[in-house]
Structures are given as structure tokens and as C-alpha cells.
Length: 301
Image 1 (spheres, rainbow, N blue to C red):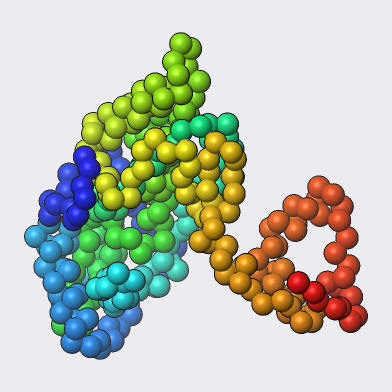
Image 2 (cartoon, rainbow, N blue to C red):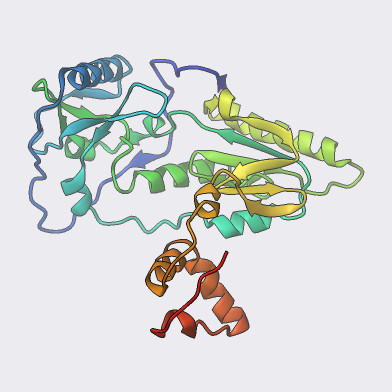
């Protein structure tokens, strides 16, 4: 259930969920030519597909579709393999399943005092592709191979929605005390008669772990946090004292140079404070005419 390093080659598949691709009427074959890459990246791509083939995630393809493959360097070193599904994504009908709202999840954790968070590993590769959509996932490599995915690759436009819907359904019975957001879920206490906060949280954690084990999900032990007074969630720190911005995430704002004119001020407000100011205007009818009028402004720290 918990893994500290890499996932096993063969992952158990989640039953009952398959990723479907609905192409818009009149869509042509989606083809993008593969471009050459440095030898180091070609080797990394070949090794990646060798591992995926051994795990039963891909097979050789004769599809009329083809999307190129390239590499992005990871911050911790090594290469992340990426597929440029630009054309198939543009031809795909967008899924209408709603994505969880950050503010709703945070509101649901309000007044909690103990928190745990867990991160699922390689969840996308646990979901099978619908059989007739497998050729739509065909990807080329610089070494001249054409592969197609039997499981759901991460870069497909509706893949996050499918994965989120799957996790939500699997953990539905625990959503009151363990809301999920894609591959993360957060356990917080709910008052229980005759139980202390610690006892109630222990029961909630046991319940969610039972679900995780029952559905054969895998969690990244290095990213799991248990029984903490505060956890990080989507650029925020959520704790028993409320919600505050994650200090690491707002460093760029706190280090932002003082605007020297209205143009620079508008850029700052539009890029950083737009959502907050919009809510402020609705609630307090605050006038922001100073950012609309062209007049001299003296900026002071």
C-alpha cells in the first residue's frame, strides 16, 4: 500500500473505470512528425518504453495516428518523458465532469485540528484505455518506434478528469472527512461523540487506509503526512488556526520590486491580486479608479 521508492513493474488495474476519447465529428487522423533529439534523451525514451512494455502499459502500434515524444529535465535530475498530444487533444470533446474547487475543500476542513495527507503514485497507469481508443494514443520515438498506450497516459486532455472521477468514486464513502484532489487526499477530524480529536482522527485514518488497501491503490510514503497540526494544500497552509499562504509560494510576491509607475502596478495587480481584488470589489464596493486613470502616482514601500 505504501512505497518509498519506485512502483512495481506490474500495477494492478482499477476495475470499472476506462479512459475514453471522444473525437469531434469530422476529425482527421492526428499526426505530428517526430523531431530529432540528443542521444542522451533518445536513450532515456527507449529505456522508458522498454520498462512500460515490460509492465504491460504499451504495445507496438500500426495506428494511423502519431504524436511525438520528447524529454523535460526533472528538477531532481534525470528526464521526464512527455508526449505532444497537441492534435488529438485539440480534436477531443472536453469532458464535463467538474473538477474539485480549492475553496470548497478548504471550507470543508475548517475548524479541524488534526490533519493527514497522502499522495497516490502512478495512478494514471492504473486506468485502462477503452479498447477502441487505444490507436488514438499512438506515439512515435526518435529511434523510429511507434507505440500505443494500453493504460491512460498523463498528457491526454481529459486524463486528469478521468483520474479525479475514479479516485472520487473509490473514496466516496470517506469524502466527509477525506476530500480528494486528483492524486492527493486529505484526512481531517470530524467530531465524534465520546472520542477525543486524536481518537477520532485515528479512526478516520484507519478508514481511509482500509479503502486504499481494498482498492489496491499505492501511496508515496515520502509525501505522506500523518497527524499534523498543519498541512500544505494547493499553495496554502491549512491548520487549526485557519488558512494562510504557503510562505514558499509567496516569496516571489514578497520579493517583488516596488512598482515605479501605473503600468507596472497594473501588471502586478493583474498577475497577482486579480482574484482577491475582484472579491474585494464585490464585497466592499471598493473603487479602483486609480488604476484606470492616467495620472502621476508616487509609489512608496
